[in-house]
Picture 1 (spheres, rainbow, N blue to C red):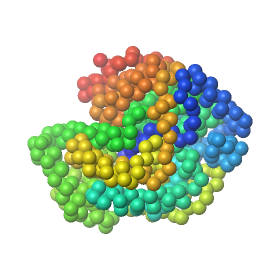
Picture 2 (cartoon, one colour):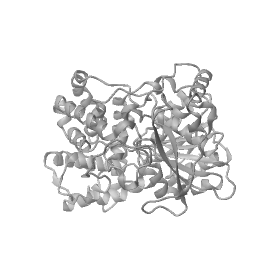
Picture 3 (cartoon, rainbow, N blue to C red):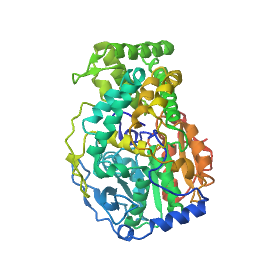
Picture 4 (spheres, rainbow, N blue to C red):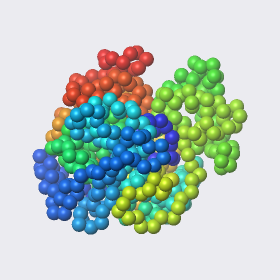
Length: 537
């Protein structure tokens, strides 16, 4: 999901949803049945030149860096830059782990979402939520290629140009100008990102995970992926079906919908989440919108329009627009736990013109060093570009997206799309529509997911869908389960927020029971809202 850099706690902060493009870069597998696909993938991935990557072992040591937990260990694996040329250039992928307590049965690999989130940083900040899993596993996460310390991509000054080009109404009223600016920005992103950029799609990240599995010494991959991490897990399962161990996908991404439909689903989900928040807010005496939910919705729409036409100064001196407000609200709605903070932030804005509370949910105004060609080694923490998350998010989603409409097609369809988006959400519609333009000017991605990730012959997988998820609608969970085939088991989380593991004790328990003991809930079973108890019904 294309968004400005956001700030959210732990799992919520990094399970961003990754809903912009759903195909894979450079997979090249022919359409075939599951057995043929498995044989083809295994044969090619074990081909000449790969043994030096598959035979390596991770060397663990204490993590270096700011505020790293003392019991967190760091390491790396070396992978081919281009899997078509494994004898050529390489890059290092950063790893981190909490060791198992007592006897270890191997590792469970975590991906927190994004795309673009640093797994090493997230495990360092929010790893305590996963400590129960250390009863049987080393808990491991990683910075995917192009992210964090693993050859991070950057757009340099073009990051701000992209945001400016698609912010507000400019991208909707003058598409020719914004498309030209985006095309120019894409060229700058290529210059600042270096050689990793053409090899940053999800298929390469999935193949990196196979290198990790072997380097960790595991017979099969045990995996817990959130949001975009579910896309990555599904791709791994399609490429290496006989290597899937206990796999959990929480906050399930779509495998089929085009970019424009994904944006519409996101707009609808955020609108529903906003209305649920306002229903809660008006029951609180501190709500800045009064006591009537319908009037509160009208006030929010009016406030967005007012700030777009007449922005207020931000705490950093830059203008704070209605679209800035929409972006901040959208980030806060990922978790019900953030509703009280969002209520206070909106009150600060309405009562004092103070934008700091809302800006706490998103950040900007960063500067970027000039970056040249990157070497194979890990990047020092202090040298990771400050725009790495949005730059990696765009790069990965665009590499996974097979649709590249021409400028004429974009211009011709924009009016119709704008009407659909504004109908889907009068608050988030325009914000989400401008993000649909982000991949313009970049190379076309592949259609691997849409064509080949289906009918998998794997061990059974647990898919968790949350009914009130604003980023990955529940129907994506059932649609993806149908597409993956009989191996997919669905757990229905009847709660709010993006993903279920951190917000529902019931989901947390069922996921841990599966990962630790192999105990799967029945397909279609559910977890009730936390307010109604933590048992299943």
